[in-house]
Image (cartoon, one colour):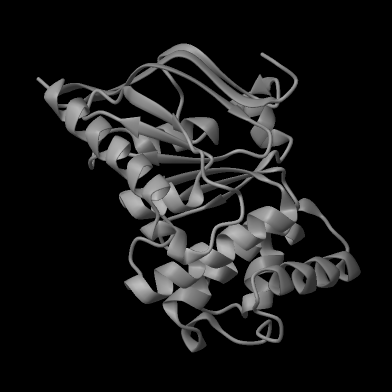
Length: 261
C-alpha cells in the first residue's frame, strides 16, 4: 500500500448466511482508493455497493480477504473516527433542532459546548445552511435535510466521507444543485469520498474514479479513471468527454449483467 492509499481491499468477499441458504454479496474485490479521491460505486440493485461501503465503515464484516482504512483495520479506523457516514435517509431526530442533530456525535465524543457550537457553525456554513441551527427537521425541505445530514457527518472533521446514495430520493433539479454543492464542498475540504449511486450522470459528474459493479455476487466489472477537470460546471455533461465516460460506464454495466448466472 502506497502512502497515498487511504482504503485498500484485497481479495475481499462477504457471504451472508440466511434461512434460504448463503447469499454471496461480494466476491474477490480488489480496489485502492487514494487520498483526495472521489470514488463512485455504481451497479444494479443488490450488487453489493452499499455492502462494500458498510464493510469500509465496519458495519459489515467480510468473510474472506481483508480491508484497511488509513493503514488500520476497518474496526480500528472506526474507533479512531476516521470517517463520517451519510445514509440514504437524512436520519435526523425530529425532536432535536438542526444544530442539536449535528451536535449529537460531538456530545457523545465529549467535545466542550464551546467547541460544539464552533463546529456546528462551521459545518452549517460549509453546506450553506447558516442560520438554520434552531430550525427543526420538519421545517426544512428534503434537500436541506440531506445537507444537514452531511453537516453532521463533517462535524468531527474525519478525512473520509462515506455516502450511501444520499440524493436518490430527491427530484432532478434539487439533485443537480446538491451535486454542484457537493463538488464545491469536496474542493474546499479535500476529503476522500466514497459515494454509492444508481445514476450514471451523477457518477460521471462527481467522480475522479468510477467503480462499476456486477450483479450478485458483487464483483468489480470496471474501474474508470475520470479525465474530466476537477472544476465541473453542470453543462460539462453535454461535452463529448463526459458522454464518452458515461458510455463506458453503461458498457461496464451491460457486460456485468452478461456475466450474471
